[in-house]
Image (cartoon, rainbow over all chains, first blue to last red):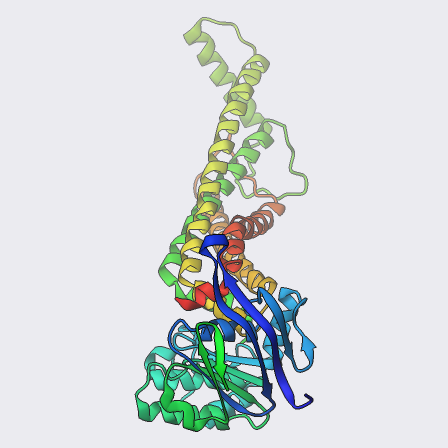
Length: 217
Length: 230
């Protein structure tokens, strides 16, 4: 399918060996369309974070293929995976995304491939932050996540991954952040993992994940 | 704000720990340089190990006549006390042997003090990196390669060593210059060859990075997925 940006083919991830072996993900096959907004919904321990770690190339599958932008990532070296991550993927975690000794502007500029201060300031303005000289510990959790979002988007990635990005926010702020994530990049495919079923209405596609299996789409 | 400027930023971050490490390194360099300088000075006086390429930071008016007079006085005293009949040359040979042994012991002590100072860097880097495991994982998630992260940490360790060595070397040069102008030794001189300060700074910087290498390698190779769960 030409319109897919991400494809997982029979992806399995196991931890441990023999009697202690656990299959966190069991032969998952999904396709994600370009510029779509997707939610991976599932309870804690269902394998959401493991799935995002595989898609972000932070981890490697025990079996199966992950194809990003038509490129099979199966046999890539660590460095090659890092390059893809830097150019193609933005990631936001639930907490502690920022470097505490760097101000907001410096945090956003860290991954920039071509250093451009104006672009970083602009990106922070887009997420609603004007005072770029503050440090992470001086702003709210919500704003910290916004800075993390600005940093994740600074290289215009084609895929934005977020692992429970609003997990520590109240429902109003959660909706605001999700809205911002959905609309920040015009050519970015969004994939969010969450256990909050209230988010269903905000996404184009929902993948229900339970016990390492995509139950339905 | 590239990854390599993290080295400098991180030094400012753990200010007290890094300052104490820098001072320990500086102390090690000071002891090493003083003992090496004084050792070379004594050897020069003894006519060995001439430092043609170097410069002497010393009172340079210890001329040959005053040395001969001093030797004769010491020789007479030794002969009268011990009831021996040593010639000046025999006495010089004896003193030379004793000094050579003292110098060897001093060099050994200097090396130990220097290494203890330098090894302080492992303590500082270990603690710095334990606190920063998640940040290293975060850098990986932002697309930096392990090599890039390791280089930035090597720079940080090298920078600690470099600052300590520069402080130590500058203090030694100032100290020796001041001492040489105030205290007029006739049989003793400090010699600071040109290569010594530069060599000390260079070796300390490289050693600091090398000594911290295992700690750096270990922390960068940790499974970033596990680290980011913290």
